[in-house]
Image 1 (tube, rainbow, N blue to C red):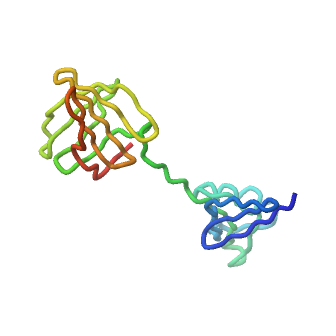
Image 2: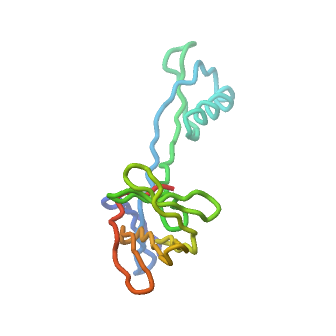
Image 3: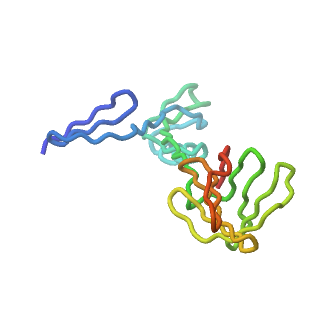
Length: 171
């Protein structure tokens, strides 16, 4: 097979024969960090990995002296952090213009108004990739926190409708 790769407008494009795979180009940043005086390569093998780890990076094997006997720098590479996205499996709070829904633990949730007063309590009945499903036994009401549509859906025995627009969510 013939493999070719290039980075185009922030996307990595890999061709395998005549097929293309698109994905985000993971771009690591490289910079020099101070590591005190480094006397030789053996000294760098000890000091540079420690200096790199202190700033969350990895030593790339490069070093140089900037002020003889006083200061050297190590080349480090920092990989970009992966952003975690709130989804139906990890969401713990959802805000809407009139208040919010909050997970209390052990499958229990509450809805509070914009003043922070609890107005309804729910039991979690399920989750999927984009939603959390809640049930209020006292009113026989089901609530769906739909993160994909950014909508709180109300459902009872006679009706179903979009109740609120989700303005924020947290995990």
